Length: 349
Image (cartoon, rainbow, N blue to C red; front, top):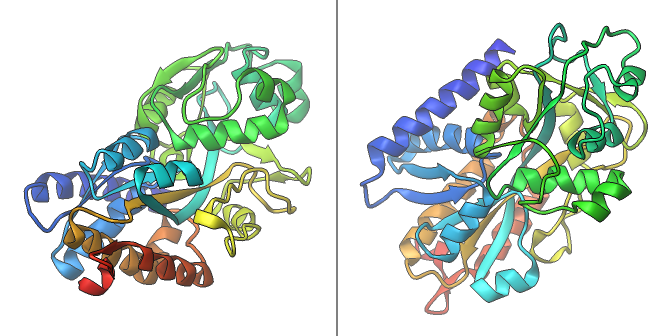
């Protein structure tokens, strides 16, 4: 745990200094969006800068913000944990492809309950976020945790306040589990939350949970570990209690079949399998198919190619699941559609 904590903290610090140090350089690769992928982008950016001298200036502003920035052409690429629809991509002249997969984890700050001790299931999490379960010693939570002494402590619900792909995947999962959630709230990057405190970004949610007694939130696993927060085990689609880990995230991702899927539009929440983590997610990169700056687009694609080929171990160290090699081959073939003056921009590099 401490090894992972140091890696994530170092990656975040490196990304911050990297962005500040190289923001003015013309050769920097500019991107914005998903905070889910930020820790691994930070680590990759640091390594890529060392290997090539080219920096990565990536703004962790949430998936919704990243999509807006790439659509406005203020950055070369956006990153989102919610894929765009075929119509949305066509309307904005964008293409998309998956960059990484991982797990979203319920995290908590409960008196006397250590990380990994608490067990939750999807129905209970949905009822907490619906405001139906308001105390940590509620009978529904107690039934899942017969060996724990749960405190008579109010539950403080924490959620994202900004447009978030993490929210999309979290609410997609709740919609698959709870008919009431699906009918009343639904799934999107931003929803009308029935209860709770809003916080901006994955970092904001983690900090709010850490500072608030009785809080529950949801976040990418790296942020949970970085902040030394309590995290829940979950009952998955097979009815098995599973821990958040690289193995359980990979088990869920292994069910994803990207072949033959237009625009790589695959959601991996609530996957089957005894060892599958139920709230697994992916991050997609969006980039213009006819970029105004072909050199910048080429530089970004060259970085992504390097990350696929050289960044798998760093991704695993941070508990992310690398995109399989056979899918990477499909992705790199799809880049032929990113052109300037009728020629693929990557071949112009």
